[in-house]
Image 1 (cartoon, rainbow, N blue to C red):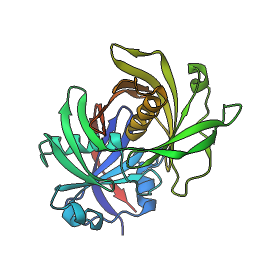
Image 2: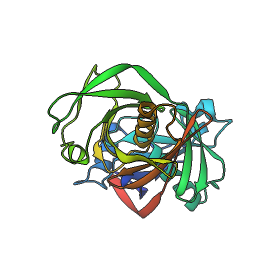
Image 3: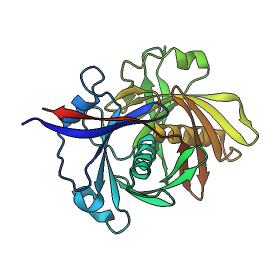
Amino acid sequence: MPHTIAFTKGHGTGNDFVIVADPDGSLALSDAQVAALCDRHFGIGADGLLRVVRTSAIAEGAAYASAAEWFMDYRNADGSAAEMCGNGIRVFARYLADHGFAEIDETPIATRDGVKILRRHERGFEVDLGRWVVEDAEYRVRAKGLDVARPGLGIDVGNPHVVVALPADSDLDGLDLTYRPILDPDPSAGANVEFVVPADPLVQHGVGSLRMRVFERGVGETLSCGTGVAASALAVHHWAGPAAPDSWRVDVPGGTLAVRMADGHVHLAGPATLVYSGQITLA
């Protein structure tokens, strides 16, 4: 039977989300319903959905109930569940703060990748994404607009990424990411694929810089991907060697984000904006 739900639309550097408050975990959204809400022609339109639910009210949050009150139930635009979203968790924090659910000051938020700490930041909010893993295996990546397959570096920041370095801005701009890049080997759970061009010079005033475009699994190309931004900075840091800086500026089509590495953790900072609220009837 159709029913009406309240929602808010938000974004972080153009990576946009439908936000639904469900503190008591009473709203069960199917993959098809999430996909309908995120549809840009027949729904609200978004790269994904953020359900605001108490950790005690969702099975996946039970292990974190003593550490965090709120769980970010993140779903991709096709309805599939994802471990983490770096832009989404900042928008989630903005929603909690603006709607009186929580003060954001060293605030824990639970995700499928564990508990993340959110802080206020001059750019908006900063999230501690935790530790990262550089994979040993090398990927070969084919994409429409590239004449040959390029090597890709696997980086796990709570969700999987493969980062590909390109030599020039023209190569990055020439990609057609309406087509999904092909990975060899193909990870069983899929991966987000980032294409990056390091700046020349790479480092200015102690800060490294690069440009990035991304194809997100379950979504397609997006204007920004927070964990992808972190993975891209980590990959270029890895390639650059031990003299590489720990602070990075990453330009994406939707804006600019900051990444820093400290004490074995990677941190992501950037804006989070709530755009409008409304109601929609679900079939």
